Amino acid sequence: MRKKRVLLFSEGFGTGHTGAAYALAEGIRLLNPDVQCRVFELGKFLNPTVAPWILSAYRKTVSSQPKLVGMMYKTQYHKSLNRLTKLALHRIFYTHASQVIEQLRPDLIICTHPIPAAVISRLKHQGLDVPFYTLITDYDAHGSWVNAEANRYLVSTSRVKSILTGRGVPSELVTVTGIPVHPKFWESQGKTKLRKELGLADIPTALIMGGGWGLMFGKDIMNSLTARINEIQLIFCMGSNDKAIAKMQANPLLNHPNVRILGYSSEINKLMDASDLLITKPGGMTCTEGQAKGIPMLFYNAIPGQEEKNSQYFVELGLAEMLNPGVVDKWFSMLLSEYAGFGGPQKRKASPDLQQPQHCAATILKMLGKPAAEAVFSEAWSAPPPKVRSEEAVYVTP
Image 1 (cartoon, rainbow, N blue to C red):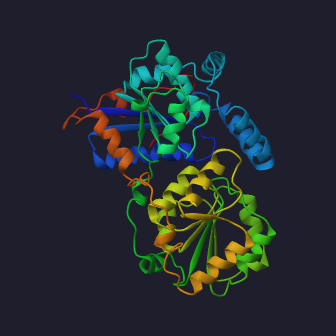
Image 2: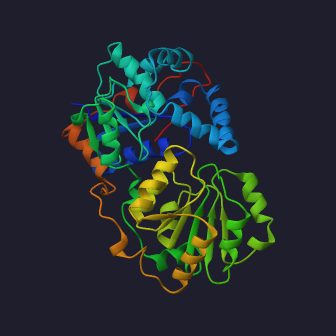
Image 3: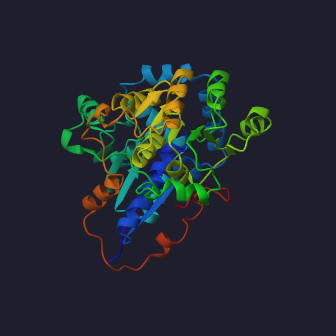
């Protein structure tokens, strides 16, 4: 008997959707190595020439016109993708999606982005006989996530479940699992030990994350951050924004032994453990990772739409505050006075939605049932799939 197979589809609009897919795949494999997981950014795999152009246009729009993004989000908030849109997506970008599924023969398909979810729902409507789950990777549910063919929705909170049921999704098809985070975020390590390992000073430390694209804030906030640079260590993680990194490195104000300027880092889990405060955009994945690490958060530049909803959720729970110069001053003063906890336990609201970080992976395994203890990998599953479109096809590995 072969091993159970889970196929995860995402898209690269931001980093959180694909990050959630990889996190879930790693979590499933850690909890039960007898389940095989494969992750694809489906559009990039099937259309490696066109997809980067689309992603680049999206990135520029988010950076330069966030209000437009918010307006589009809100005007379409209650609407699912219609039949003609799904047909167009399939014919233009996803014609060969069914071939990937047919070859890999998964026991379960999980989509962490609305577009591949729409494509799989169309294939289900045409007769695809594979269970199809939608994993919503924010603390809100836009109408584009909803498809009648989805067998189950995995959501972050009971509020998101209520939004879906309010749109006609049967309650029994919605499971509150929390958003999955990589197993590296499941446990915390000692702060002092990690600071030594990472070459950091053992003083109050703020981790400032610019998002996967390195989006940042303005002069007033930067002045507040650097006002106590002799007493508080600043770690800037700027993602892939090479121009911003170069500009910051050339800034005399940041030429200080208590300042680290990093690009992409695979050690965010360690940096969170080594820090006392996280300053970040409220992306669903980063918020959930911060929650798993138990680090207080300050949010800035929320993209209108889902990031606003994310920030609202964590602020209401007492796990975060919105960033402004006064808030930075308050928090830095608390760090320097050895403040023991964010807002104090008495100010943090109880919530049944704060799941253990491994809960989503464990829930999937429970739904799959106990997989076979031993299995022979088929050639199709253990090797990269063929280039179904051309020699330009890209295979995305976990």
